[in-house]
Length: 287
Image 1 (cartoon, rainbow, N blue to C red):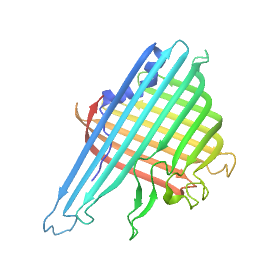
Image 2: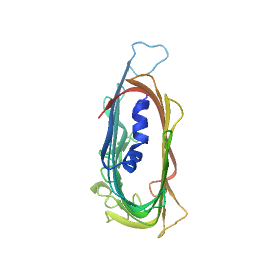
Image 3: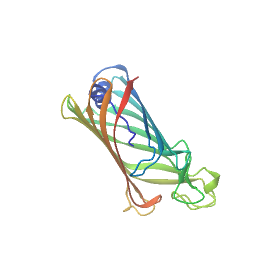
Image 4: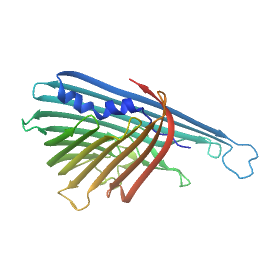
């Protein structure tokens, strides 16, 4: 079973040009898409074994809003992903994917061609509780804003784009980040980098965010994101890493094949690199 976000080439081009459109003309620009995938399988007396019944559901929502007025620009991005799977052996829906991400950028043109300066705000969390299903008591390991991250970054943004690619590099030498642990289940634990008996920890450090979109052909497109954060106050050498990769091949106006690879590293959550790979075919809807 594979459940993932699939989008057509025309939509990928619009997504890749979201900031381009906002930078090139005055007024509001809005783009978005919604993806809903369902996978089902069943077996009866199957000699090689396997689940007798399995159902997978995945939902993706993406919305971008842009505003330009003279030298000022505003960009807003909202992303939501949610996935569940149910199998006969455990007879319940289990979460496979859960992400809620909001980014707001307020910038002013420096008059130097590719350079802008301004502020970036980011919110990142999940919507539902997460569990370790390998333990007998189904241990709770995460929840809404547990962890959660709020980030405020003044900095400089370098942009370069044309009809086939888009590149943005935002750098802030002094970024404030708040990591939250609001669930009462974790209040008395040292978890997510937040001490016991506390719900929030404040960090400040260097933040870098890179976005790169590339159209290889009329059917193939790549979208990538890389975020790095180094905490000045504690172990600055332990750089938090978030990397998202999406390669999509269009099969027509309705279907698309996609390959997704996500790479995460946060020493306060897990002391090793986390990997997620999804390959699939699905339906998509423009907003």
